[in-house]
Length: 257
Image 1 (cartoon, rainbow, N blue to C red):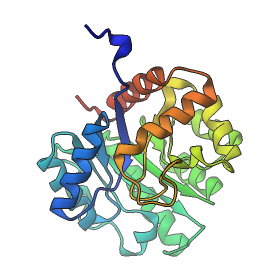
Image 2: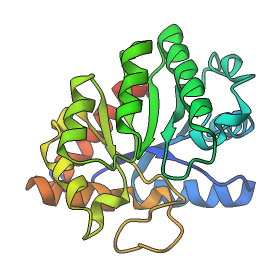
Image 3: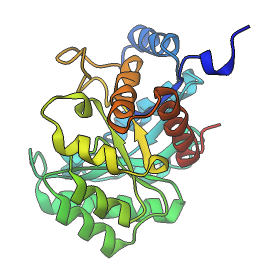
């Protein structure tokens, strides 16, 4: 008889973007389940995309959805977003935030739309999923001005120890993607090493940022275990402990049962 110690680690991919094609999404979800990924959070980046994520969550019991407007899409505003947040399949507001690396939307629009979604998280009590790239000071300024939600996660964390400390000081959870497996990601690895284990989650951000050894390919939730394995290596812990802790944190954070 197999003991619990011999059981393979099971994971939650707390941030992914599932395919729109019906056959393709089934194949991706099936592959994830076969790889012991027991749940996936399918993240909305605009209102139509959030509606599509909710539909996928209705279709698959192993999928939950978020509803939000990404900073790239901020120039389009958030009309229709608030109505989606009462859907039982929606577990968070976002992803939202600031991206000054690409500036696909004007920065003032980004700040306005981010602030509006922070307010929605505070009003609904839902967690907030934050995207911040090359915009740390303004991200913190908006949060501090509007009011930091009780639950917030900085997804695909790309900062170092200083940025991690500022996030943690605001009560945030940090989520690490395949970037943590890259040899050049010293700052991100340092942050993953110092983050309290109960404030840490893992994600793929698929179809982007495939982890080593799949770097350069289209990412998928089935590979989130590579992220967890790297964090286990960095922290000198058993990978099963990382899987158990990150999955427990994700369930509590999103209210996944």
